[in-house]
Image (cartoon, rainbow, N blue to C red; front, top):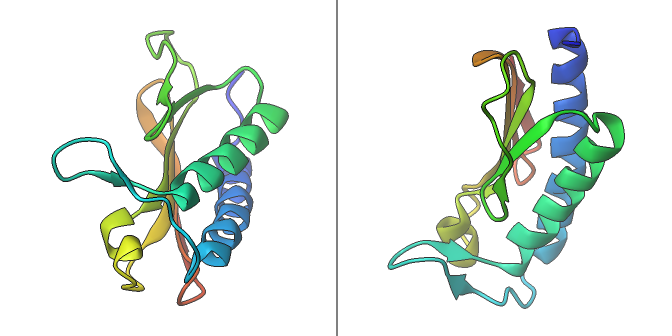
Length: 130
C-alpha cells in the first residue's frame, strides 16, 4: 500500500537530518577516502550516513525498495512499489576537500512518480523538502 506523500516527506526529512548529523561529526576527522572510479570518491562519512539511512528506512518501511549510491539497490521493477533513492553524502568531493558544499539527498517515487524529496545541508542547517 502506498503511504501518504506527506508521511514519506516527513520521514525522509527526519532520516536525512539524522544522517546529516553523522556526516557533520566526520568533518575534520579521518575520512578514509577511497575511489569508486576514475573521479568518484567515497569516504567513511558516506558509508556511515548510508548505514543510518538504510537502517531507518528498513525499520519504518520494511516493504519498500531502496536504491542507494554506495550499496546499490534491489529489484525496482515491481509495479507501484515505493522506492527510496538515497545519496548519503551528495558532494563527497567537496566534503573530502573541506568545502562546506554538500548535503544528504533522499527522493521517494511511488510507481515511478516522485512523491517526496529532501535535500538537507547540515553545514548551513538548511533543509528543503517537497
